[in-house]
Image (cartoon, rainbow, N blue to C red; front, side, top):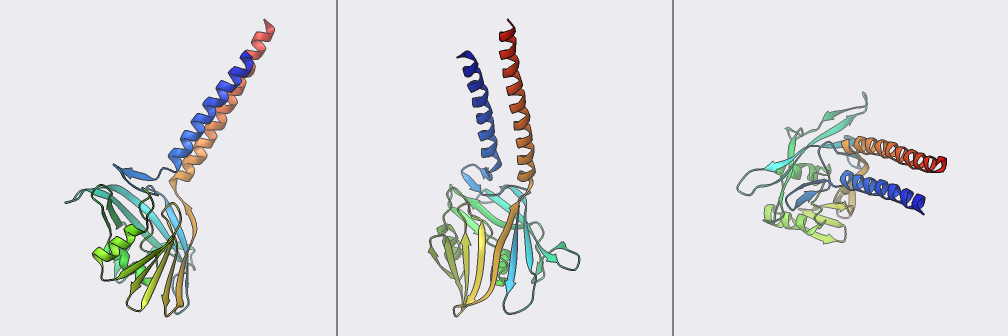
Length: 241
């Protein structure tokens, strides 16, 4: 009975450590009660299909800075770098749209307590081009009506929410954005008269947390081996007595 209790004790500790690590890997970033579903070093990659004109075929969105933004309303700030794939060299170069270089640009500002949420103007440019722009929304909890509120308060556009999709009406163009349960943009369609002009589709997510997860799993395996060896050693020692 004592041997079983000892093994159960070691396994319980191992599972507790493992579950704690899993929680930290997927925790995202939080300031106060305001949070977003990514952390510094995370990235998103999208395929871009333009049915009208040839353009970049793939984009990479890197979350380069998440921080406390100090202003009239202190808020959680998210800065991003958006790059386009150069097929000839298979490398990414910083995207330039309307003379704006999308390197370390502010994507959004957010304060849940003060019910303040805003995408920066340059993100609207990306949205209209079909390049996304509204890449993430807060996840405390995920609620697309926060984007609708932004549209109604800070732009001359209108918007409609159905389930996990928000349609933004820009003159005779519709930008249809679909998000997953974590609050990450997985698809943008630009439509005109029900005809799809372009489609942006999420193909990959990742970042520094992936390497941290690998390290954590390695440490967990080592701990498990040590726990088993200690248990076996104790059992053999008691048998020898």
